Image 1 (cartoon, rainbow, N blue to C red):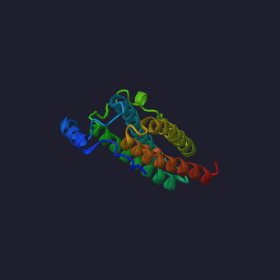
Image 2 (cartoon, rainbow, N blue to C red):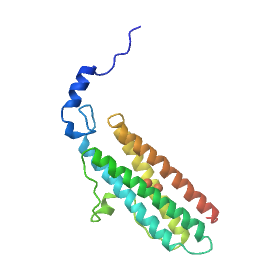
Image 3 (tube, helix red, strand yellow):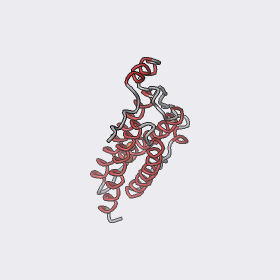
Image 4 (tube, rainbow, N blue to C red):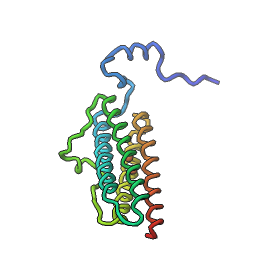
Length: 179
Ligand SMILES: [Fe+2]
Ligand SMILES: [Fe+2]
């Protein structure tokens, strides 16, 4: 049985790695369209920041009989989203791009919306909608990255899993409120 050949011979790999060392993690074997990947990651970054702001608003505004436990959940989610924003920014820089942290146009770049909500139930429902938007758009990104950028794909897969947990938490909170 013939052995499966290694994709690129070592001599070629070594020679390629020596070229364009200024590009850091981006090697000649990187087959994704870097411009599109950075643009998509910047949209995910905007989504995360809008989610941080919305969860923070909800955290500070939560009031009523069930407020304490719900507010704690809002804060936890806000911190998770901030962590995602940082991971995504780091990856953008690794790819030779720049994280777009400009507040101008943030809501246009974001897939999720910023809705304040009047009651605790409204807040939870809006957060759930936002999570569901993020879940669908991140899944699309993951499919797009495919095997062309496995690192960005893996990062977004891990983030997606957390957004799914967030959505699940919110459904449970709604259930706890009898909604
Ligand atoms: Fe997130
Ligand atoms: Fe989330």
